[in-house]
Image 1 (cartoon, rainbow, N blue to C red):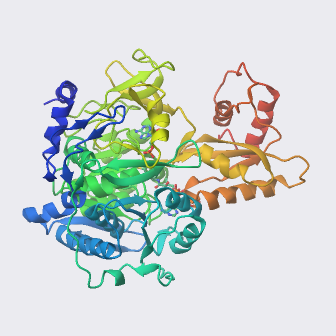
Image 2: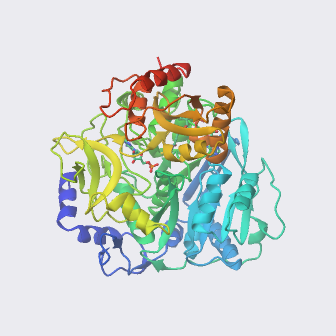
Image 3: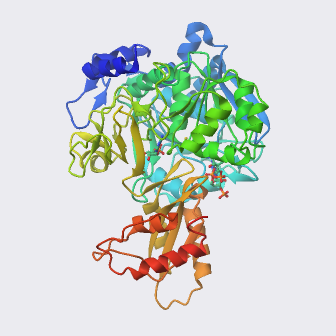
Length: 630
Ligand code: COA
Ligand code: AMP
C-alpha cells in the first residue's frame, strides 16, 4: 500500500488502525478497545490492556529463540572499549537488577531517577524499572546539580541510579559530587542510591544511603515482569518550557510500545535483527525512543555510542561505527553532521569505510538545513530523511516513511504527516490557514498512541501549555506552513524555547538564573543563529544603578552562574552589560527585534517601541560580541 492509502486508512478508522498495530505487542491482557475518551480533551490509549515494556523489549525475543542475537553494542571511543550484550544476557542482567531494586523496596508506580552516561547499564536501569512497573526519569548528564535537584523534588524518586562519572573529550564529568549536591539541595530525599562504579573514577559511597551496583545485586532473586495497565506511566522525561520549572512529560506504557514498534519498520525500514543506531543520548527523547525502547521492542540490535561526531578521535567516527557494526539505519541531529562537514568538507573520511550496509540516514531535533542534507546525500549515497517530532510526542509527527514508500525529498521539509497525526496550520484565532501560509502548527486531538498523556503532577499546566489555546487541538509550539503537496515546513518556535546543538533549552529559564545575580536589575536572553549549533543563547544584563561593578566581571559571573545552575549543556558563553533593554511602551522586551539585529537580518521598527535609540545601543553591544557574525 502507498503512504496515501495508509494515511487515509488511518483517518477513516483510527481505532481499527491502532488495534491492528497493537497485535504486534505481547499483552498479558489484550485491550478491548484502542481509545479511551471519557475524559476528553484528555485521552488515553489501550487503558484496559495489561502489558510489560521490559517483556516486550527483552524477554519475548529470548522466548522466541533469538536469545543469542546481540541486543546492545556499546562502542565507546572515549574509553577505547567495545562490548556486545546478547538478548539472553540482557534478560538475565535486567532481571537481577530489578530483583535487587525490588529487594530494597522499589515497586510498581515508584519513581526512579537515572543519571548515567552512554553505557549499557543506563538502558539496563531503564528496563529494570520497566520490569517492575516503576517509573523512570532519566536526567541528562550535561545538567548541573540544581537541575537534577528540581527533578528530584518534582518526581520524588524512591531511588536514584547513577554512574560514578561520565567522560567528555578532555575531561571526566564527576557525577557523584553532582548527585550528592543535588540531593542536598532537594527537599525530597531518595531512600537509597545505586552507584555504578566506572574504571575511570571510583566514587565515594555514603554509608547506608549508597549501594554499589554490583554488590547490591549479589544473591538476590531475579524479578519477573510485572504487568501494568496500558495507561500506566512508563517514564517521566523533563523538557524545557517557558520557565525554570521543566515540564515532566508522562509517557504511557501501552501506546508507547505500539507506536514505537510500528515506526521501526514503517518509518525506519528495519527488520528484526537489523542494526539500528541513534547517535543521541539516553537523557533525551531520541535516546528513550530509539536507543532503548524502539529498537529493542522490535528485536533490532541497538548501538550505544559514547563519543562525539568529531574529535573522538576524528570526523570519521560515525562512518567507522556504521561500517564496523553494519548499521542499516542511522539517526542523528543535523548539528552533528555540520560538525563533521566542517572538518571533512570533501568527505575524505567517508571514503575510508565500507558503508554498503547503510540504507538510510534520519535527521531530527532541529531544522535540517538544505546544505547539510545535500552534503550527506552526496557523500553517503543514501536517502537522508529529515523528520519532525518532540519530546511530547515521542515519535515522528512528520516524516518520509521509507518502510511504506519513499516519497520525493523536498529540501527544507520533514515531509508529510504520519498516520495518527492530523496536522493543521492555525491563525491566532484558531482558524485553519490556507496552504502555503505561515501559522501555528497544531494537531487535531486526540494525539496518537505513545504521545504524552499529561504532565507529571501538573494537569493544569498540561492543559494550559498544550490544549487551551486552540480548543480541540494540541499546540506544538512550532510555527510553519503546509504546501500544496501536503509537505510540512517547520520555521520557528512560537515560544521562548531555543534549540542549541539539537538540545532544547528555555531562554526564560536562563533569564531566571541571570536575574538571581545580585547586581542584575533586569535581563534578556535570546537565541542567535550559529553555523554549527543552529542557535546559541546570548544574554543582555542591566546592572543595578550605582553598584560600581566592572561590566566584564559581572558578565563572567553570569556565564558561570548559568553553567553552575543549568549546566554546560546550555552552552551559555555570550553575555554583555547594557544600560537599557529595548521595550514596547507597555514594557514588553523586544527580544525578536534583538535577534534580528544579532543575525544581521532586516527588520521593521516595531510601531510600539518606547525608545528606538536603544536599538543602536544593542547593536553596539552586539558588535563587541562579534555579531552579526561575518
Ligand atoms: N555530560 C556532561 N557534559 C556534557 C554532556 C554530558 N553528557 N554532553 C555535553 N556536555 C557538555 C560539553 O562537554 C560541553 O561543555 P564545555 O562547555 O565545557 O565544552 C557543553 O556541554 C556543550 O556540549 P555540546 O552541545 O556537546 O557541544 P560541543 O561543542 O562539545 O560539541 C557537537 C558540538 C555539535 C559535536 C555536539 O553538540 C553534538 O554532537 N551534538 C549532537 C546533539 C545530539 O545528538 N542531540 C540529540 C538530539 S537528536
Ligand atoms: P525536543 O523536544 O528536544 O525533541 O525538541 C523538539 C523541538 O525541536 C520541536 O518542537 C522543534 O522546534 C524542533 N525540531 C525537532 N525536529 C525538527 C525538525 N526536523 N525540523 C525543525 N525543527 C525540529
